[in-house]
Image 1 (tube, one colour):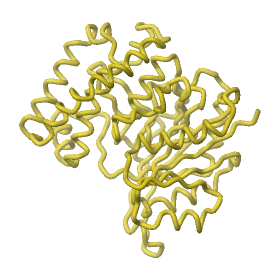
Image 2 (cartoon, helix red, strand yellow; image 1 turned 180 degrees about the vertical axis):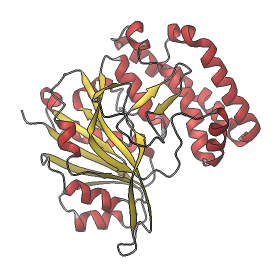
Image 3 (cartoon, one colour; image 1 turned 90 degrees about the vertical axis):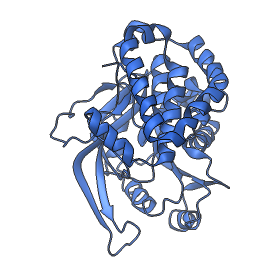
Image 4 (cartoon, helix red, strand yellow; image 1 turned 30 degrees about the vertical axis):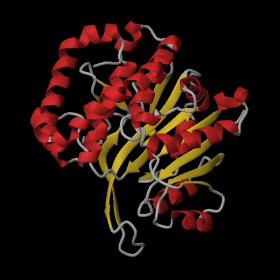
Amino acid sequence: MKPSVSINIVTWNSMRFLPKLLNSISEQTFENFSVLVIDNGSTDGVETFVKTEYPNCKFLRNARNRGFSYAHNQGIRFVLDHCREESYNDNFILITNPDVILTPTFLEELVSGIGVEKKIGSFGGKILRAFGSNQSDGVFDNTVRSDMIDSTGINAYKNMTFIDRGAGELDEGQFNRNEQVFGISGALVLYRASALHDARYKDEFFDNDFFSYKEDVDLAWRLKTLGWNAMYNSNAVAYHFRGMFGKEKMSLFEKFLNRLKKSKVRSKYSTRNHLLLLIKNLRFTTFLLFAPRIILNELLRFVYVLIFETKNIGAYIESILLTPKIILKRMDLMKKKRITIKDLHKWFI
């Protein structure tokens, strides 16, 4: 059966980026795809634009911002409800941010690797950073497609931090090898429908309680626990406009400075969801093995919030309040786990 791809885009006042993404999608050499836009209550005319300029795109609209996780879950359910369960292995869903530009062969390259191994549940390419000004102005728009790496997959560290592989490095061919990785960045990731179905908890694929930030790491970790692999393809290239970013390899002082630049809202969700991530996915054996690194990292994080982000102390309170719900999800996941501790620990560096 010929593979089919649904490209799912969640928007929230994203019109300064969306036209570039949709144009790059229209130029794809792989043609067996559909596009679904899920809008989170935008006020920038996105619905009129999509329905006028791209009438073949399906469009779902929420009355308010329901978050990355909720909106993408709507889109994933829409796709799964419109294909037979026995065909899930040949159906794929591309999750993409609106601030992404695909190269013409991006989908073709990713899809070319789907038959290598049926237990590969997610696929990702080489994402480089795009920079620009006047993004919404067709005359004065200046877009630079750089050689700086945004992500070549997600690396998992023994202190339980998860960072985009190669982020901030110049692309000099150091990641020009197709290989399995811990996970793929949620900015641009192709999921096998059968893997998403396997990771499903009630109506959730991404965790709704995360709202936004680190929900991609949570899903990557769950898929790994369930025995699904993630494949990086260096030939599938895309570009990402990222508002706030850091490097994979930073000193403690550089991490401190980078954190200071982030919005307080983003830092709050990042802190809260990091804790939820550990409660939900961290096995007790893994904690014991890496305990010194984990405890030190969490202590430094708490001290930082206590001194520099006092308004975000509430992130810890919220994580405690959400713990009962997260525990139920953890219990469901652990009942289905298929990867051994030994195999899981190979992914933490």
